[in-house]
Amino acid sequence: MNNHGYAIFDLDYTLIPHDTIFLFANYILKKQRWKIFYLFFVISVIPLAILKIFTSKELKQVFLSFIWHIPQDTLDEYAKSFVKEIVIPKIYPELLQEIKEQKIQKKILILNTASPDFYAKYIGEELGFDYTIATPILLKEKQSLFPKIIGENNKSYAKIKRMQSLLPENIQNQFKKYNPINPKKPEFPFILKNSISYSDSIADLPLLRLTEKAKIINPENQELIKEAKIKNWEILTPQKPFKNKFQKYFICFLQSIGLYL
Image (cartoon, rainbow, N blue to C red; front, side, top):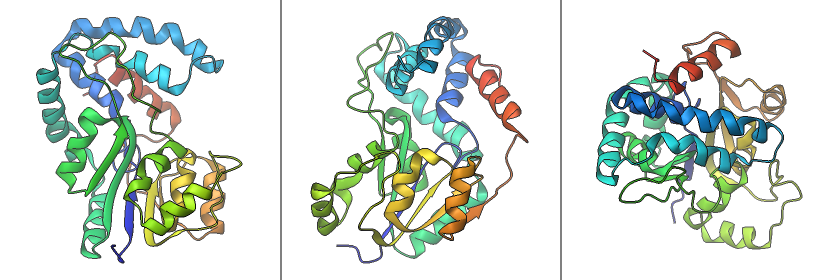
């Protein structure tokens, strides 16, 4: 058992000021411009997602149609080069320092993200994480039009469930008895001592509340900011490549059509 604790990091808008799935779409579209067709499917299902008819899992499966027909070996090479050329250079320097400091403290480092596992695993590898937990995508010799997500989209409480086997045995035993009333905003009767979590999102309240300490990265949600202040969670504000939500979403739009940088 590691008495030094854990350091658990979200990825998108936490380590990097982007949503990496949009960045990866941008990367693929620059290589295969004809894949722009995928937007037809995405635009078609957005109203269903707004009406809660489509889940975030189903929406992600549709969004991933931009990898359709890419051979598995080619996709793997794309993932490796994407991480080295695009993702790593965009990591916040302040968060690189946080990772370095947690390594010095000998914490178990976990990257826990909703991003697809086929490239997230290489981000964890490049940054020296002990474990990477991400949304598992069923890859094939050539990719399906709507790649299947195995199990749940790795978001909110799903992050906790996928991570439990890595935690101390006493915490695992307590989880077996624990049934949260609201899985999106659980209040745990136990915590991970000597541990810290990092996120930008209200969706990560399960992670943030599980650890003894937490650091919030450029939070936008007022409820999250309020809880951070009440619990003395540190708020980090590294410089972003956008000034407001309009610019943020415009960048996502540019990335989704392959015209970012």
